[in-house]
Image 1: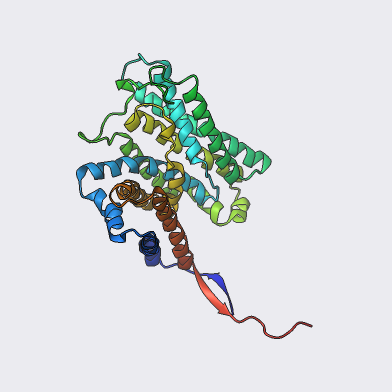
Image 2: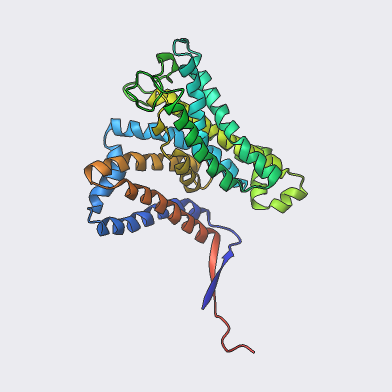
Length: 359
């Protein structure tokens, strides 16, 4: 007995919408068994992970704070993913954005004025885009695999960060900790919701969703991306430039990740630290696919992933859950979603293998 997957003539819209919910339920069941095998109370874990972030305003405000960078990065990555350009190096572009943005308060610690934090955001976005130039050039000119190149560029970015914080940018009054000086008040993004750490960068993230929707759903450029991803040969015959799609995909992804990195150092952290690398760039890949690569779906999936971030911290404290288990939950969620989408788009054709011996 053998089987093969055959693409459906028309995928069910209802099932495509239900796929993320089914993936979440399946992931919960699988992780329930994992928690039982670990000797943990699964109900206590799920309560801490999925419910506690909504039970207090302080907890939910932290969810909104995490949603911002995830949403920004995922929107940028999704554009490239739809064109089959796989930028796996958003983490490195995030770090470079943080470094570029930090250059202003590090070199001009006495500067004042309302221009500082907007300039930091612009500089950070440019830094992330510049870090994406190398894999874009290598893919177009040398046909190098952008998955490997962007991933390796992230490792280089971490070493650049370490060099700066252990060397020229190290705070001389920081008790030998690898961190920069604390940024001045005018280098901090204004608070959006008083009494919380949620800042104006959340509005930028929501604006990115609107812009991504307008570009991908209502513009000819977005149509080119879609055709280039679904039917590359047809796109070539139509005169759509593959090189242009590669450059735009990687530069947009780098720009968004760099902007998120700048917003992180100019927002809740207030200085450049080695802990700026929190895995947002990799988590955003899950967010993009869990949202179906659709700008509006990504808004919902980024909120869910932010809940898992904050809820995971709660579970580590109240349910004694190791951090690895939280990451396993995130990874399981992606695998379950990809499996669900596969069965939405394909059906299984069962066939019998030929019986009998060979000649």
